[in-house]
Image (cartoon, rainbow, N blue to C red; front, side):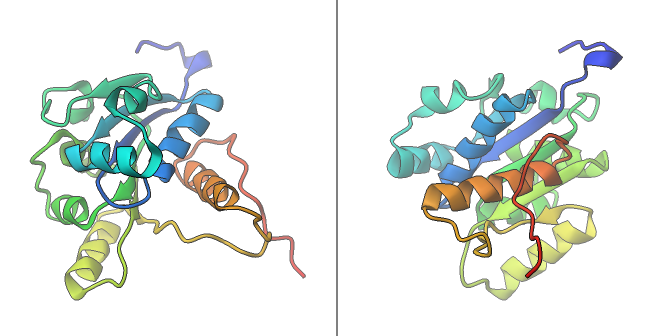
Amino acid sequence: MPQTAAAVRPVIIVGITGASGACYGVGLLRRLRELGAYTHLVVTPAGVLNAHHELGLDRSALEALADEHHAIADVGACIASGSHPAHAMVVAPCSMKSLAAIAHGFGDNLLTRAADVTLKERRRLVLMVRETPFNLAHLRNMTAVTEMGGVIFPPLPAFYHQPQSIDEMVADTVERVIEMLGVSSSAPQRWQGL
């Protein structure tokens, strides 16, 4: 996507895996569109199943939320190369399987390859890991990703602003992640002190 220097839109890669919490990936895609970011989407087969189960969305509905979408097996896609000018990547939600693959550089599909590229190019990678409780392998994999420069961001809601619905909690978390991705127009609720 050619852009002039004066009109650079943030380019964000969004991955969705089969962990519970498809609302985060969908919420990110919708909000990033509102903020004018250009999005690339890659979804695992389990991510499609989970989005259908949790939100009633099929693959085509998910793909319609992004500017570009890529098949999970398409390791020749533009986002598989560090020469592609993406600013950041988020995996929302991120399963423990995808976390393990990313932590060990096992780019066996486009999602994990794009994450590996994001790390090697020293770009922001945010993993919204979804599991509880964590076992030692999960914790070690999160440590490995953190040591490589990635951000582990479990979608834990804040309650100090007294959210009135699940949608409010999801929206606030989405805003915090967008800020973490470097999209300057995000608007998370700020703690104002007591």
